[in-house]
Length: 232
Image (tube, rainbow, N blue to C red; front, side, top):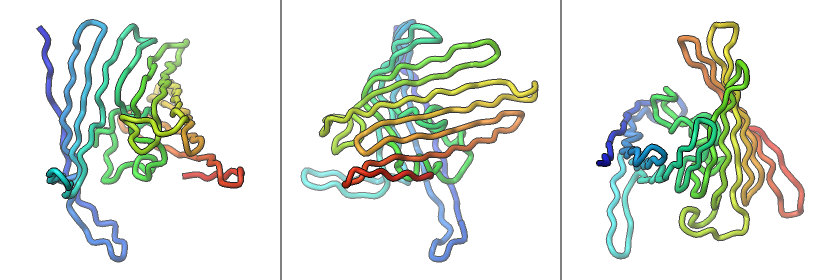
C-alpha cells in the first residue's frame, strides 16, 4: 500500500526598508503544498505547488487575470541507487547556489526577501530534464555534487525547447569541520545556457548559528562577438 503524504508551509512578511516612495507593507509571500512519497525502496515522487503574494487568479476561455503567482516548483521522480549515485527526472529547482539545493523554504533563509541570485532571475529557477546527484566522504571531507541538463531558458522551457542550446550545469560543494567548532560548506556552481555562462560561489557556516552568503558572475555573448563579465 502506497501513501502520498501532503504537507507544506506558508509565511507572511512585513517589510519597510525606508526607501523613498516605498511604503511599509505586509506580503503573504508563500503558501506551498508539498507531495512526497516513497513509491518503493528505490523510487520517490516529489511535487510542490507554490502560491505567491496572495495569488488570486481568474481564468476563463479567453483571459487570465489576477495578482500574485502560481508555480509548479517541483514535479519529479527520483531513482535512488545509493548515497553516492541517484537520478532525478522531471521538473526541479535548478541546483544553483544553496537556496535551490535546500528547497527554498523560508525556514532555510530567515530573510524577508529572496537572495539576489534568485530574485533577479540570473539563472533559471527551475529546470525540466534530468539530474545526477549524491555525496561521498573523502577522509574528513564530504563531497556533495549535482550535475544536470534540461531545456534551459526559452519561451516554454518546461514543454517545448525553442532553441538548440540545452541548459547544462553543476554544483560541487565541500563540507568540512573547522577546528571542531562547527562546519563550513563551500559550493562552486556553473551553468551554460542560451544566453551565456554563469558561475557562482556559495558558502554556509554552522556553529550553533547559521551564516550564509553567495555571489555570482556571468559571461554573456554580445552581438559583435565580444563578452561582458560582471559580478552580482
